[in-house]
Image (cartoon, rainbow, N blue to C red; front, side):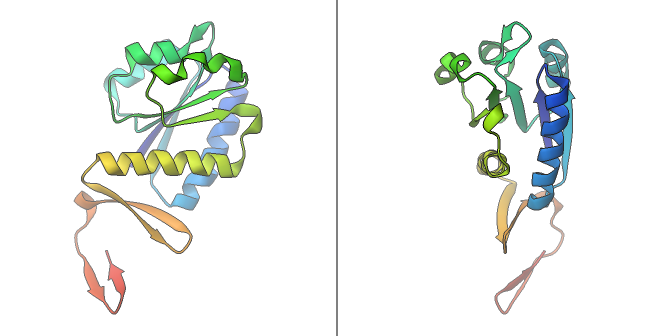
Length: 160
């Protein structure tokens, strides 16, 4: 299961993003869980006790620059951070942080969201030796080898 966390102080935008992500993740056919926060203190408490595979993080949450905040508070190197902002000039410190993707909110398209998710999922599967992504037709599937009970190969077809 892919654990996704959203953090933005604009609650309306959180709802819109969650809806758009759900549509995209249904295309990827992955099991997922989305959790949303509107402040960094609640996010920090959540990250202390829970795994986060992909984090969508607004660059300015309240009065705090979350790029600087992430350098101090996100210890899990496997977490894929996708920074978001409505004001590109706020991205001055992105080069110092480790992030997967950068989204300008007013320009967010379904294709851009799909690309961000694809890159994050690819990074996750490359870092986790028990995960892999396979493509069937136009859909991508993330497979956890620990969940595989049976594999059969016959005439160029694979059954998991």
